[in-house]
Length: 288
Image (cartoon, rainbow, N blue to C red):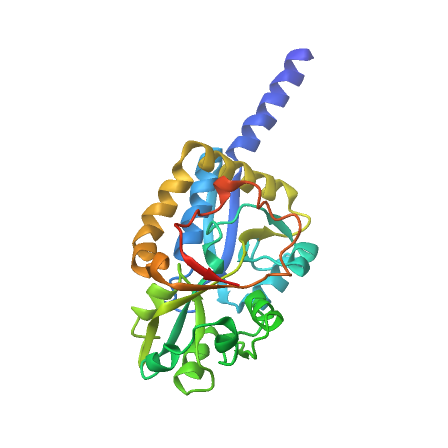
């Protein structure tokens, strides 16, 4: 009888190890949308660190971010979404509190029309920049951050249409993170009549996390375990540097005039004290 119980327990253990974790994430908005490449690679890295069997697939349908988050809340279509965190999202969903971009999502360069550089030469103080109109996604936490800092924001639900809004002079600049802007400006689908402004940057504390459904604690624990292991053994940093060092070099942040903004929407549980989770910048000129 004892042998039977031990054998059954071993069978259950082996079956659990052999089970496949099926991870579904939001499908990119288009074939030219490269924003999913790094998060998917990081997801795969985290899962590989745990030794589990897994499948990693995009959702069948394209979903705007707000819809993807609602689907995640309802346990439909997706079971992992990456998103900038704020207090509301952490109340509705379960965050894995490891910033996947090491805070660079809050380092913003300005996408502008190519006939506008001269106008930005006169921006010497934050009060000058606030007089210009930024473009942002309607349901993005960044929109609330900009508004709380005094900006009058033009917004739209469609990611692709934001470039058109800027191009049509319905806004003056489109703040994009240093990890996103170079893929966008190099992409013919987005870059017509646009350029990256050369002298200004905006920076505020911000984290993008992997989120899962509130009831998906085992998946959250699995991803957290894998990410922590990748941080410990250096593979997280290797992927990060391989993906973003060229973009950081291209941004030349140390030579830019950086305007620091407040982010009152950042949850108090954000692990700001864990220095290894955040990119450490070189000295740069900053203005509050």
